[in-house]
Image 1 (spheres, one colour):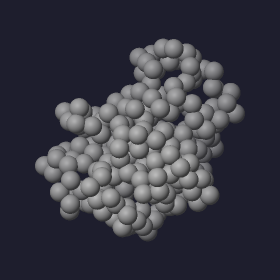
Image 2: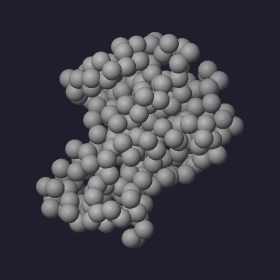
Image 3: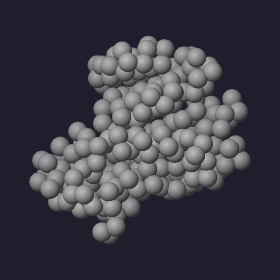
Image 4: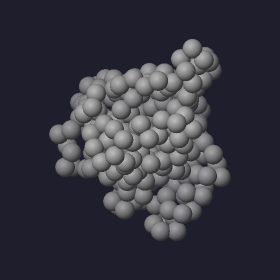
Length: 251
């Protein structure tokens, strides 16, 4: 398998992550998917392996906010694929409470998973690319809410804003190794995370702000990620690409 390009997708069991895994498998990559829930990540592994074969899919039950788990992720990739060409840092949480009611624990959880988890996987992935002389691509999942504020999700706002700046900083330092670092800022995407907005009663308000007045499918993000990993995007580096159906055009 060492002659086939390999991609890592964190938060790969559902939603955007699962769509990214599918797109990269269709694009000829071997794909490692990571998720915290063992049963769910293995269910997705079976679903994808039934289509693309067991050798092309690797499921790893892990928490990206744990240094030990991140070490395990890359050790597993090394063992099965012997390389890493693309890292997609998609794992994330969006705890939702008003600012005055947000607990330290809730804020800390958002920072640890969304920000620290992205940092650790970026660093480990980049080290592996450098060691093997691979001109790789790191794709971080930001958010429109890393660019504009939204009520009740201060931890998400802060951590996604950090992801955008980490993308720029890492791209600057990794450019001499021919490793590109970019991020995607999804808008309103039809994933399980939309349930939060439905519960808050803000769903209609959110999706009405896109140009086409409806959520985008996860595949819209996955197709963008696959393009950004391709040679056609070789000149794209250190930037965040909004995939928001025009949401930010209203801000």
